[in-house]
Length: 61
Image 1 (tube, helix red, strand yellow):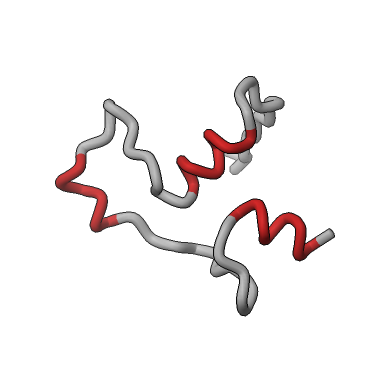
Image 2: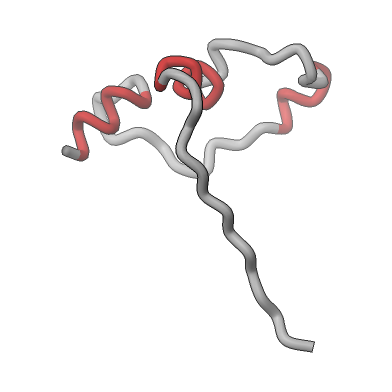
């Protein structure tokens, strides 16, 4: 059997600020098991001196 990956991309339907809050963990959704939050891992770090997702996007541009 062949190995394959499926990737679906969709345009965000909400404001960028809500997505940033989700990624930066400044907002905890109601369906999150808070006892497992400590298992989250940061796979990519912000560049030196950059503190937020919006600033990272601006830094990259």
